[in-house]
Image (tube, rainbow, N blue to C red):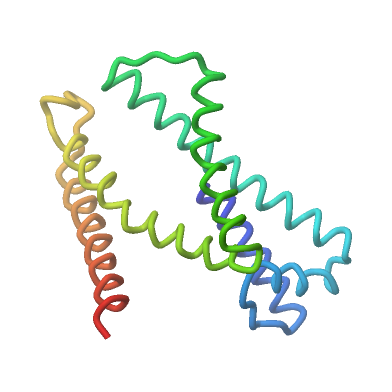
Length: 173
């Protein structure tokens, strides 16, 4: 997901800079700015393909992570088709409901809100990950070396600090 999202960002930034447009407010505005540079048909196709690739990458990651958690920790084995269907339904049903209730115009705001929520959930994944991979009893010879433990703890601390800062900036005015 990192590489796909980075590629989208780099291509969009280069395209907007080349065309002299540097004020992009939302996704629809981005599409409209791409059209004169890439052509209406090409812009919509490239933009749609990039968003589709990003979405597929995200759902693939979630599906694989869910499989590892369910099989490794919970000892629940589901057929792959059922796991994929459940993961996609869990993702698409709330998205469709949000679009129906809030309208197409607020899709950009909902995307930003979803990213904020994901950032707030990130410490709940990162902190246990650092703890588990730093535990010699669990990891054996694959335990994190001391320098990586320090780096991982520093990254986790920065993530938690940024989330606290976000919450303070949002709710304390």
